[in-house]
Length: 152
Image (cartoon, rainbow, N blue to C red):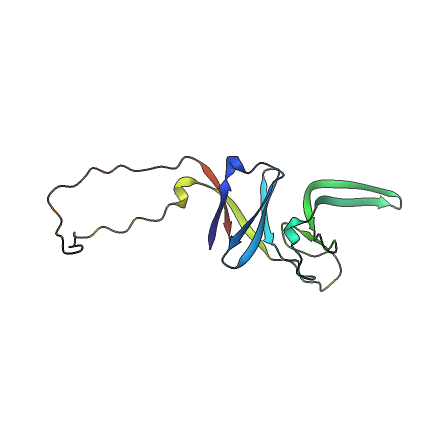
């Protein structure tokens, strides 16, 4: 299932959107120029994961020393603070803990979102009508904007 989330120009860095794909609620995040998407359900106790805080990785070279590194790519569930990697869905609370489902997100030109046109065949009678000899001139239509698309 493909879901068009938003036009790229309407989805600035640092923003998140929660969309519905079938029966699933999925959070889509733009961190810098990268997009991530995860299921909006914490595997721990079913909390609304995508409403949680986003933070970068903490790194340390020893006791009393820590720094935040890289982009903010960890999401913490607002209920209990369990953290997950936005890219992979990996949990960091112990071995064997379930990960959250991560999805692919892409940026696509509007033309790529069009449905393929049906193959033309001989004109058929429609509703008892036979096609006449005249044919209206048609023109190709192009969408020149880029869209954020979720593959769920």
